[in-house]
Image (cartoon, rainbow, N blue to C red; front, side):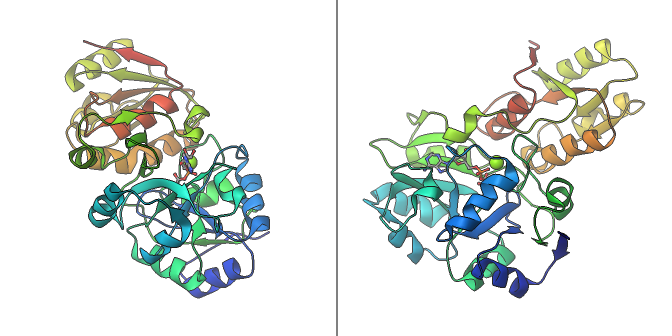
Length: 323
Ligand code: TXA
Ligand code: MG
């Protein structure tokens, strides 16, 4: 199968309407989409990605009216959160309505809903005439794709079209919050965690989404994370470095590492720039065929928790803490 990269929304929507699968852009990462009502297409998504079948999918909507159709017992906090963050990099988990097929939710009684903040994505969903499932458009366990080219690298020959909406501006996947129970629970941190805490209060709980137990985001090389004050982690890496080790560093320290294979992924205090570049960095190292990567990880705060979460998982929790 030839895989084409296109900006033609009509061609891609036609494929979805006839029961196919298309990679689509969002502001977070690219997704591999299909109609929530087409079981055959959804099975294909699991197959193409090599995704475990007990890992439920996020339903992507283009209009807030679709929320009522797909859910039941909407709690008051949902109105506050959707008003503030839809469209945006936030996924909310509700009790599901009978309309949502079991294959979408992997048999759970809840459903994850998100409205992406991306013009082309919203237009595309609308043209498809149905909400779309869209897990990240990478092979399972690989870094998520933030460019059409990343999707091509993983899925060439497995899908017919990639809808090209440019580089993803957020760069890590949406924050997932379960609001189907008594208290809101953050299942996956993302870039809007700090603001969410203002709505849910500080006593929110953190748990794991079903998908978070699997190996994730792994580059081909072995990745060691250095966590702590940026100056200290830079010094520690410098002490341990040899010429064969690649470095993923903050832009502030690029000059001291540039003799090695180096990717600077944002200034040490610029978390949105870091989020945007994490997956590109990991995929860059794969292309350079490096065997070992040392990476600077920010100190974990509300603002950096999504970045730390992705980097820690990518390293398989191979972490060196520097005080
Ligand atoms: O930013 C994003 O969310 C991207 C873009 C494409 O929208 N999508 C994405 O999908 O990251 P995926 O499938 O890679 O991750 C979805 C996460 C998984 O960890 C899954 O377990 C969790 O959401 N999830 C989905 N439905 C759920 C449910 N009903 N209850 C609990 N967790 C759920
Ligand atoms: Mg994913």
